Every structure is written in structure tokens, then in C-alpha cells.
Image (cartoon, rainbow, N blue to C red; front, side, top):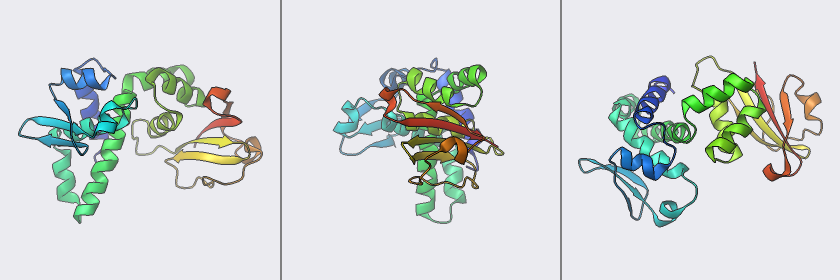
Length: 217
């Protein structure tokens, strides 16, 4: 992300002004952004910002999509959206970039920087951080894997977080293009296949026969 670090700062600054509240409804109200039901999920300016959510997302327990729309507002207010529009070679590229930025912004709203820094200070970059972050933030394991791996979008980061189930690689999130394994690969002995990884056998509430691993080069 060309302006990733700037976007992290923009989300963090805006979130800090409202106490890093991770309750979407309370945060939107504190930011004076109305949220209404409509046919589509969107972030509009009329000219003041307005978030529309389809009925399923509006009433859902999961808040990622709602925070995604909130991230669109920060992206625009920060001026980064306009810069992306200027840099893009075609409209589809611009939309793709915007969605990627706002997916990260949604994860940052759900799992704020101070929470991630605190857990990294306790555990270092390990599977314990992922599990603790998921539990504290009320998100699923895959979202926590994404947030921990991408961290603060450091340009030189080469990190991987992966999940095996039984003898197979179930999920891998990586910033390292040389990570040799792909989802669905057979890894019957993960400790032998990836000896440098930190591994954690997960309790059954996270799924049966699952091992969570982190790898930092």
C-alpha cells in the first residue's frame, strides 16, 4: 500500500479522538455519522457523511462490513482517496485499491493499534497474540491472523501466520512472497515442515485438530 502508513495514522488519529471505541454504533454516533438501512452498503457525502447498510449487515452480529464503510469516510477525509484516484491507471484499479485500504481500516477499527502493541509487548510475534487479539476484540481467528501479520504495514516486514487442520494447511496470511506453502497443501508434520515457526495447538473451541503458527524472517 503506497500510502498505507499514512492511512494507519489517519485511522489511529480519528479513532483515538473517540477513545478507541470498538462498538461500531457508539463510535459512529460519537463521530456524528448517521447510519441508516438501505439497499446497499455505502459511505456517502450529502454533503455530510452518511453510512447506508443493507438489512442483513445492519442487524448482523459481525461488524467488519460496518467498519469497512466507516473506513471509507476516513479514507476520503484524509485526502488519500483523492490521491489514489489520481495514481490509478483505470477505474477498476482505483476501486480495488480503495477496497484494500478499507479492509485494513476495518480491521484496525476492530483491533486498534494500542491493543495490538500491548499484546505484542507481552508475547512478541507469536500465535498467542493472535488468539488473545481474537478473544479481546471479539473477532474470528482469520481476522486476527490478518491484523497481526500485516501489523503496522512496515515496508520491510516478512511475516506469516498460518493455521493447519489435521494434516493440511487451512489458512495462511503472509507478507513474505517466498513463503513456500499454499492453502490446501498437505503438512502432516508441521513442526518438521516449518521448523523455525512458533506453534500453538488450539483448544477445540477454535476447531478440532488445529495448530496455529507464526513465522518471522
